[in-house]
Structure formats: structure tokens, C-alpha cells
Image 1 (spheres, rainbow, N blue to C red):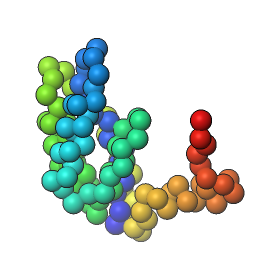
Image 2: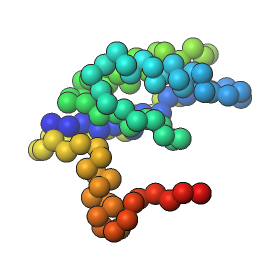
Image 3: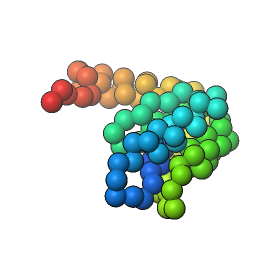
Image 4: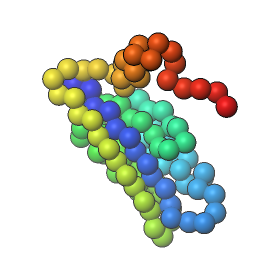
Amino acid sequence: MTVVALLSVAPVIEDSMASEVAAAVEALEDFDVAYETNPMGTVIEADDVGTIMAAAGAAHEAVDADRVSTVLKIDDKRARGEPAEAKVEAVERELGRDAKTER
């Protein structure tokens, strides 16, 4: 089984969030997950949903702020294990090109 999730953790502040987001991402290192951070959040991949939930909880707790906003979207594909990158590759096959552009 492969579980893929999109995690967004951020303090609710006016200033730069970079250091607190970095703390949230660093917290993921304590778990058996693969992850990739992008401008809108961090994609996490694990073997089970419990690991995803624990990692997301640790990332949330790592942010030192009076108010923290966390969004977690989980894709728990139970019938077969397909890595996150396979989802992108399938879209790219349909497009016949990379699913991104350079600005």
C-alpha cells in the first residue's frame, strides 16, 4: 500500500513564514516518509496512513506560533501501491510532455 498526502502547515502571521515552515518540514525527518516541498505545501508518501498522520501531527506541533493553520489531504490507495511520481508520470504520458513549464 502507498499513501500519498498533501500537507500544508503555516503560522498565521504577517511576516515571513519561511523559518516556521522549515521547522515543520524538518519535523518530517523523524518519520519513515518521503517528501517534497513545493510552493503550496509538502507532498508526503508513506507505507501507511498512521505514519502520515503522525508525521503531519509532528509538523503541526513544530511550528512555534500563537495560531497555526494545517491542511492535510490524504490519498490512501489500498488496492495497489503506486508511488506519488507515478501519478505525475501518467498525466505527462497523456500530455505528451512534462507537466510543468518554466517562467
